[in-house]
Image 1 (cartoon, one colour):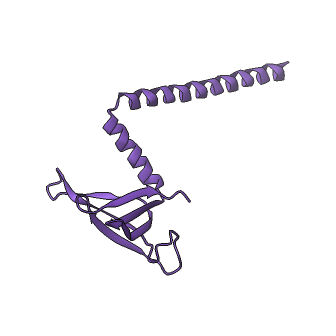
Image 2 (cartoon, one colour; image 1 turned 180 degrees about the vertical axis):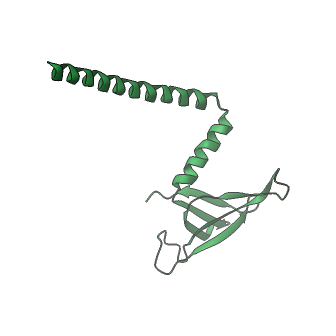
Image 3 (cartoon, rainbow, N blue to C red; image 1 turned 90 degrees about the vertical axis):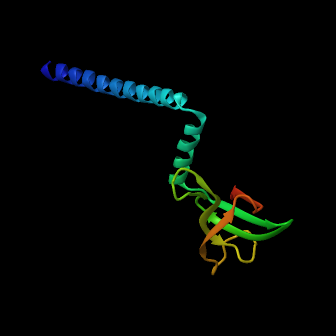
Length: 133
């Protein structure tokens, strides 16, 4: 009888612990949704970008001269806008690191190296997209 009552008591403690965990996780989710919904759209975008910076993207940057593809960079994690020296504004160019697709076949071939690149926001016609492959 003593063993049965100890077993029942143990089951009650375990079920309370599981219930408390479920309540904690539910409260955490509700709190997170509340905090994110109270953020401005710009803040939500910054949070999304920072998460994306952690996870990375398989980005492709194509630079055009008129209608012709001039350069293609692949396996880009992110493009960064250069901050001004005073830190309060941004410079009109972006930079990043990617693999230069020398033969422009859309795949990373042996011998193609990771390089640093910069381009102007104003005068460079470019397309940046996530690699669909």
